Length: 259
Image (cartoon, rainbow, N blue to C red; front, side, top):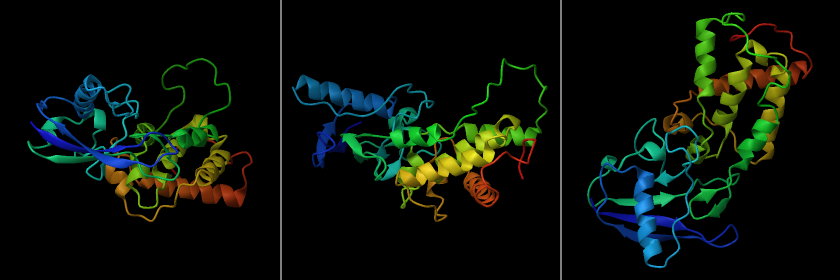
């Protein structure tokens, strides 16, 4: 395959960026998208040019590091697929690809295709944890949890925090990410004592970071590589409203599960 790449190049956070065109000949359809970029970078380095900076880590769809807009779509054309798991057979010989970083005020560009996603870390630090010492691992079924509730918690826990939901949203909203983290813990018994406080703190931090609001476009769900459902946003809104009215004191609800 022979491709023409239009890649966003930006020296650093303070400089202006621009699209730069590169030819990518001899691309194997069996390569992953990141492996294709590796080959392009090896060619640039051999020519004495600066390689393209992009994020990657596990390359197994787990860590959420790979974060590229490919032809205007977060993670590219394949549904429920991270960039690192996207293969070049998804494209055709002679295609032109436009590769850009996430575009959001809360995700400032550091260099080329790399953005600062530490805003997500600060949202987690605001309450995305259980602070009590739960002791050692308990025996199975010591805390009976209905299967549908456990399944919902697992669905929310799949969020890898890649930020595709923010990149795809016209408002750069982080509500899908935040709602998944709030719901994951809020559905389980261990997360009940801090459920109200968690909803208030994480939503307030999300707003403080400069993310926009949800306007029910569902673009976030469409591009999420883990298929996180927007129903968690509705659940987060209910938790936030309840916490705003009742305060952030000790929870009245003792067990896990959906309201």
